[in-house]
Image (cartoon, rainbow, N blue to C red; front, side, top):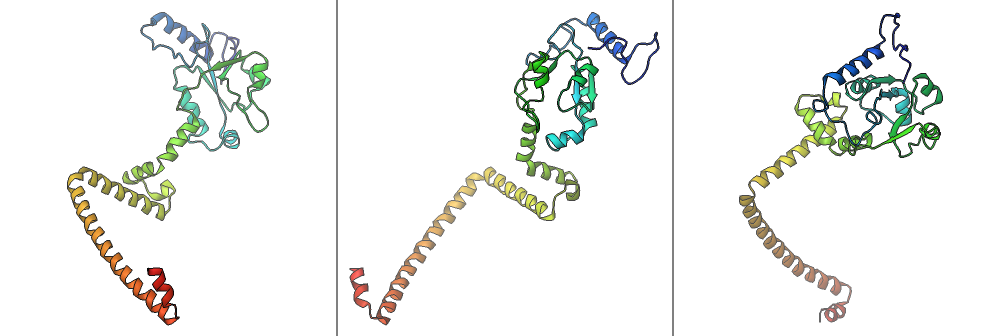
Amino acid sequence: KRPKNDVINGSSSPNQQSPRENKTAAREKSKTIQTPKERNPPPTDRPAKKSFPQVYLLVGVCDDETTHKMKGKTVLNEHERAESLRHCKWVDEVIEHAPWVVTSEFIEKYKIDYVAHDEIPYSSDDTSDVYALVKEQGRFLPTQRTDGVSTSDLITRIVRDYDQYVRRNLERGVSPRELNISFLKEQEIHMKKSISEIRTTIHQNWHGTKVELSNDLSELKNDLAQTFAVWESRSQEFVRGFAARFGAESVVVCGST
């Protein structure tokens, strides 16, 4: 929370409300106009916004340079991440270029009462928990993670179905160069598509195909049986000839009996 005379991204005269005061006034107005039945119910597993009767929720967004260094490459850039958060109805204000590790200076600058995050320690290169400071100060508010929407979960989904996404975009006219794939990778994806189509065709025509495959397998078994019979006969002749050449007929005969 900040004093009401604080101004964000601009200046104000004594008779002019700051952006935050405007947001607060609008929020209070909405409370008087809308009844609880008209508003969407608050989430029960993400209590940051509804932890106290009146909460002004600030969400910090680290910049790309820091995030790429500490965690890895992102799908959205810092501006896209910040803008997507601004469209979340539970968020009152987005703070860009937030520090990776929460500091006393950051807390004081934005008049923060509590820092909300799930209670599992979040380690980094130089600390075992980036929220250790606020936990020591009693300003930490533990929340619950939403299963299935973490960065790791989303990346796992993309990597798992990578070929399907690439194939879909190729079919939509996106060039291999735009997708950053090689010619060989493109051909591999086309081949997998063809195999998939063949499997689908077999599945759809399984009855007729099953009979055909059964007949083919029977013919193959007969051919293999004849081939093995010929090979066995020829192999015995070869062994006897080899033994006779080196004077080992008795060994072959004894072995045969």
